Image (cartoon, rainbow, N blue to C red):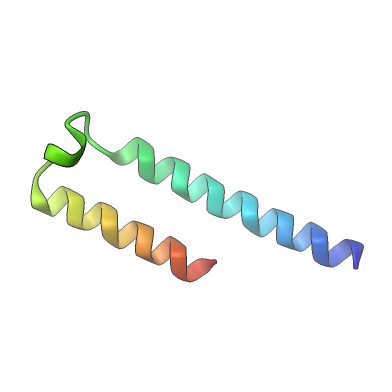
Length: 52
């Protein structure tokens, strides 16, 4: 059971890192960014969601 929790925590940290990188990739204009930029951002968030 200890090992299962450790594995879960490691996976959760990986997902948190992905979200952090995704947020850093947003341009300064945020929601005003080009549709292509926002589409790529949304695709990355969807991939992260699936990894959960």
